[in-house]
Length: 117
Image 1 (cartoon, rainbow, N blue to C red):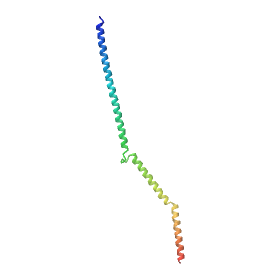
Image 2 (tube, one colour):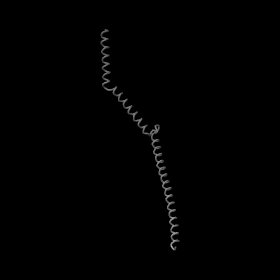
Image 3 (cartoon, one colour):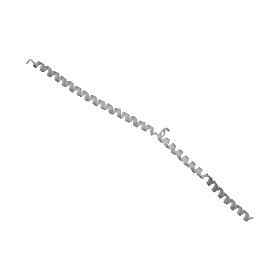
Image 4 (cartoon, rainbow, N blue to C red):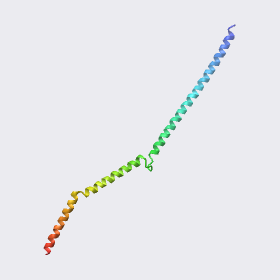
């Protein structure tokens, strides 16, 4: 009988501690859920920023874009190839062939003139 008030008080303290512990666990669950939500939002924002940076770099009209630089490089290579073709056409061999053709036609014209006399 003498211990009953103490036991009742201890039972009440234990009940309060359990209630407090349950509240703390609930609060911890809420905080973890909030943290997970914030982490997901941060990752989503980072992914959106990365995507927008990539889209910005793909702009074809932007003279600094990779595609524009690649197109310029292709145009330079095409112009270089065309220049080499023109140089090949005007090479020494081609000039000698032209002179031979002129020489042949000049010889034919000289013989024709001789025959006409």
